[in-house]
View 1 (tube, rainbow over the protein chains, first blue to last red):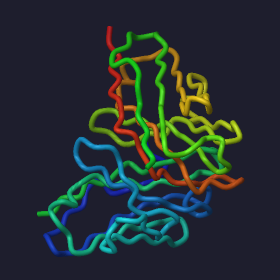
View 2: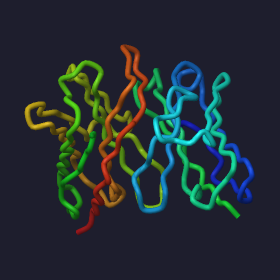
View 3: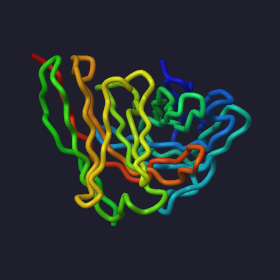
View 4: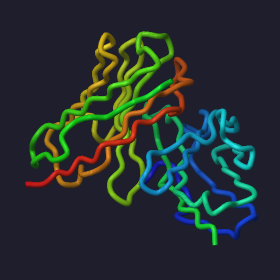
Length: 110
Length: 124
């Protein structure tokens, strides 16, 4: 049972847009920055978004992040088959003094 | 160029202690703000954070695994070591180490570089 809640799966057609939600509480998302990670099959996770909405160098602007209250959202536009992966949100939980992750969302590009 | 690499046994027996080493390059853990963390992922399951150590030798552990984990660093060797006692088959997972940036005095941070991971199987 993950501290952060994500939908198990989302799907959309190539070229379309998809959003992935991440729900938490005031002790984690509500008062800390959120980051997002992409994990392609058989590989290590890769940083996509940090500090709620910032993209590391090399991450295309098709990927975006936002936060409102105790929820965060990852948006992906112009979907490509290469975007099929598992996506995880993560943040710090001030009450637990721990990093917490969501349960992951599997993106299928139909 | 930042790199991290995990090393350790691929197979451990139940009740044994697991020792994993993260060897990194491209940064120093003696630099203010630097942290290294361990994360694991059971086959087909989600990421689970385990522990982190920062430049000031502050350590944080997963609440559920705290009694079994110890994290330490050897700054001169650019290594971070994680030990996990009393291993069980449910601890079978790929174990990753990752660098953390963006931590403040109240916590936070994000994992900007990850190692490739090492699969540890717990079986008799």
